[in-house]
Image 1: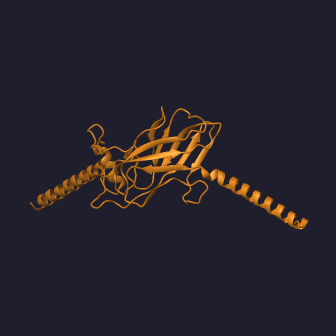
Image 2 (image 1 turned 180 degrees about the horizontal axis):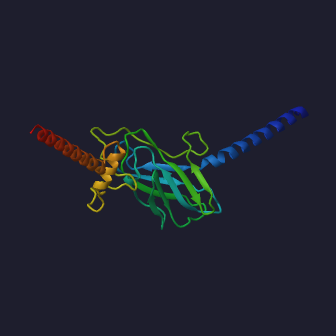
Image 3 (image 1 turned 180 degrees about the vertical axis):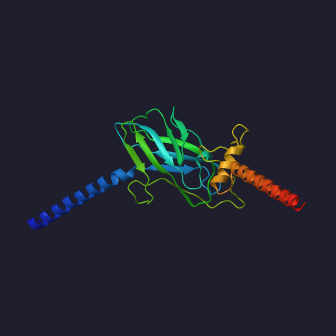
Length: 238
């Protein structure tokens, strides 16, 4: 006995709904499938001279990647990072809060793969590296989401607990900061001149040099008048 026409219609509709749903899932998941992968040869807290490798996947079929900018996680200063390996011709530049690697345009569809070396990893369970990936046509992929379920999640490096006895090393100066240097005699600010000091004292409620001279002159005049008065009295008594 053949199925009823109604049954055929229901089955056909279910097939269409299933196909549409699958297509929608693929469309939604497509953009989020690309990401930036990160790994390290020493994924352990307080590890020294740890090499960290990045693989920024390309999402463009018409333009190549020209630059990758990374915001370093707390506990890693730009001065503690050196360039490892990367695409031919690319250079490393430290910034205030991270670094940039970039150079000649990569082939369209080619991932930007490079590595850095960190003086010492911080005492943390994971490290998040917010990444901005720029293409030759000025397109920018922003891998900065802090939620792992985000459409554009930032790469996260999981760390094992620090080895027994591991201790933090001294921090390096931040980018653009140099060691303190005592001022040279030429750079030392000269002290204020006597005239300037007198003016400052006068402005602060003190007496200037001119005022003291005036007071001295008044004292001399008063003393002279008193001496004359004494002489007159002595002369009168005689």
